[in-house]
Amino acid sequence: MRRIAIANQKGGCGKTTTAVCLALCLKDMGSKVLVTDMDPQGSATQSLYPDKESLEQTVYDLLVDSDTVPLSGVINRIDTDLDLLPANVVLSSAEQTLAGKERREERLRSVLDRVEEDYDFTIIDSPPNIGLLTFNALTAAEEVIIPVDPSFFSLQGVSRVVEALELLENINGHKTTYRVLATMYDSRTRISRELVSALRTSYADSSFNTIIRNNITLKESTGFGVPITNYRGSRGFYDYRSLAHEVLGKDPTQKAIEIEAIQNFLAPRRIGGGVLFSYMDGEVDDIDIEGDFNSWDHTGNALLDIDGRGLWQRVISLKPGEHRYRFVVDGRAVIDPNNARTEFLDGRGLVSVTAV
Ligand SMILES: Nc1ncnc2c1ncn2[C@@H]1O[C@H](COP(=O)(O)OP(=O)(O)OP(=O)(O)O)[C@@H](O)[C@H]1O
Ligand SMILES: [Mg+2]
Image 1 (cartoon, rainbow, N blue to C red):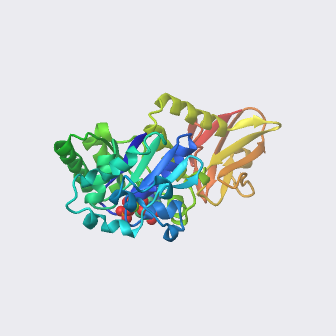
Image 2: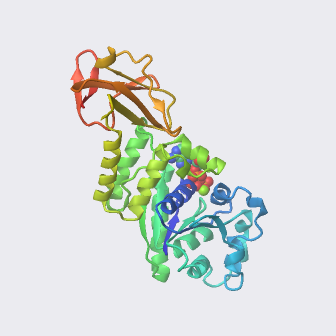
Image 3: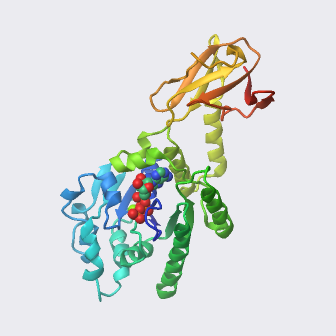
């Protein structure tokens, strides 16, 4: 079982969202996953198990008495291949209960040793401070993901986690690898762009290539307990799936092949008497098409969200040959992201070109 802790003392930087969405994507890609909640706020628990008040036992019971409490009463089945070791506010008393006890930061590691053979992964969510609970999470893990949202405190939080990892290694020889993950990225803001370049400079060998973009679907899906894997057209799903790919260490060329396959599927292609135009985006309300075939007038040329999840398509009757076009997404003209061929037209700007 690979044990991955998600940690950063900065509050609200995307720890829980990363823990839950990564777990869901890994499960979706065929792994058996346990989500371990080590935060007394119980946000990961809430998002996977909305009736969390009804839980009789939580990770707290195991931390306090890791040898005799049966796991079956504490671990909850959420879905096929997805289980939850939940937490609630009672966990906030662990620091006091375990005060003075020996090896108290190794409690979670002993608990997870008992399920070592049962899962491919456990993803451990942790609270926004570096106290006993986070030390337990870091000691139980071999890998750490440090989410960083675009803020100074979040970047500072990375150093705190790295210091804690060094401390643990000095105290008990426990070695962990860590990787930094940029979250809530908004390309329109300067701080987002600066943050990513700072991470790429300071943590060149220990940051993910994947960047998690700011995305309302992530907020909604975790808030309402709806798995992100239900929103396949959303950017949140793409980004966390890409993170899961990196975590699985999939050959980047394999990923490139998949992206190419999707692009080939979405690029304009001839079917029957016309050309099928496609655009994928689960976050928009209207998509039209304009081109030399309709005098660049997109009115009455809407694409249809054919699966209700953001795959927009329209067939246009066209003679074989070259055609220039653009999509109009929520009123804004854009080139086709799945067609590399573009051209600059006087008075119109950049347009896509297809020959089908
Ligand atoms: N990529 C994203 N785009 C938009 N909203 C996001 C994104 N990631 C997380 N959020 C939202 O931001 C808020 C904080 O995220 P989250 O709860 O994952 O952070 P956290 O680090 O676990 O917080 P805490 O420190 O309180 O545990 C939540 O409302 C969440 O839905
Ligand atoms: Mg959280």
